[in-house]
Image 1: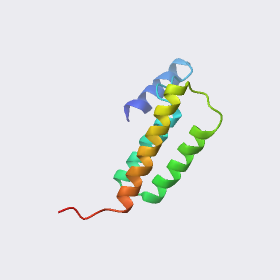
Image 2: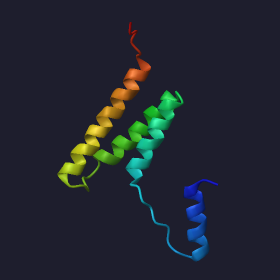
Image 3: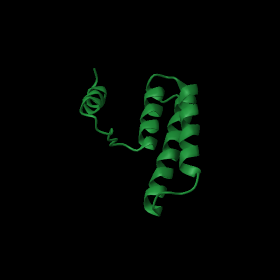
Length: 90
């Protein structure tokens, strides 16, 4: 079992509410990068759309965090574009 799953099982045994240490947007971004690493570009695109939806709906974050999140989103779009359009480097 992975550490995350083991932790959830232990929490369930103790009857505690699960504690999540990462924001959902962070988890979606991690899944995006994993999809890119596995060359699942369509899945990566869909995950980016989900992430964009999450970040562009009503702002919940302070401006500095929102700006950083948007920069991360732009960087993710750039990564996917470069993976889909590789250049010949000599």
